[in-house]
Image (cartoon, rainbow, N blue to C red):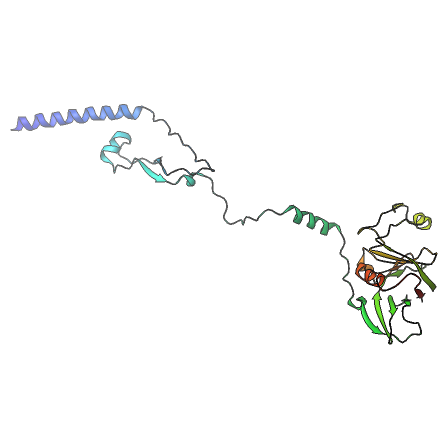
Length: 266
């Protein structure tokens, strides 16, 4: 009986020794690193098994011995979504939508152009009482107060806000409307070009023309009642002697007066 047990123990030790030698041989063979394939960002792929290896080994010898006597978790497969392999963005930083080209251009123009004062409501067109001596149909230009009156019947007048000449360019007198033009062209006179050589020698009519939408010429002089593409200048001393109005106001006045109408500038 004792001999049989001794033989069994010797056989088991031999098997164990062979197993240890085999395990050592397996440990000596280097393990090749698994290839990692990152998922294409534009194509969603099905979940694929990703092989992960534990960095720390137990104290049981590692390799085949760890597989035999450990918990079986020396190496294992687990399911990971493919998107987890991609770098993640910082969620704390909000993503803003791209700006439209028009919005970018508008911001650049706003930054480059100076801010203009708001239009003063007192210079809005309105029907007012008139107690002067001029007859209906007469245009009265009140230079000091920056108002133009078109005298009506029954003691009324249509009043408009205007811009007038700068100091040294104001004038007074009586004229007649000698011509009327829509979207007039502009040719600066030599006197103006001498003061402002940067001005164009001629400009066709249009929204960018400084004479605006309409012009009423005063006699044979260079003075006009005309519109403006700078409505913020209404109520100021700004011109070289012309009477300046907002485009919407000069269009209204243009339709109410005729060639030959009397114009009194005070």
